[in-house]
Image (cartoon, rainbow, N blue to C red):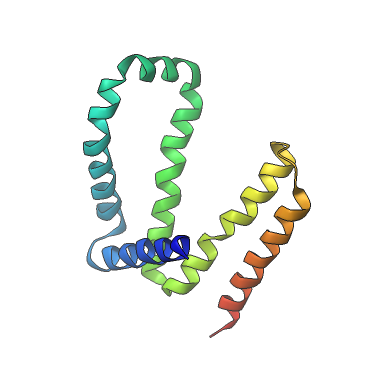
Length: 131
C-alpha cells in the first residue's frame, strides 16, 4: 500500500509540475535540487567519489545520461496523455527488471518473477483497455 501511495503521489506531483512548467524546466529544477542536497555529501566523501569515478567512469556517465533522459520522456508523456496510462506504462520497468535480473544477472527465480510480471502486465492491459 505504501509503495502504491508513493507512486501515485510522485506521479501526481510530476503531472502537476509539467502542467505548470515545460518538462525541461521542471527536470532542471529537480536536478538542481538534488545537486544542492547531495553536493555536501559528495564533498565529504571525496576520496570515495574519486575512486568510484576511476573504476566505473563509463557506467556513471551512462547512468548520468540515461536516467534523466528516461525521466524526461515520462514528463513529456504526462503532458500528452492521461496520468493513469503513463503510470501504468512506467511500471512496465518492473517486468523488464524481472527478466533482466533472472536471465542476464542470473539471480534465479525466473518462474516467480515471470508470474509477478504477468500480474503487472495484466494491470497495464486493464488500464489500457479501460477507456
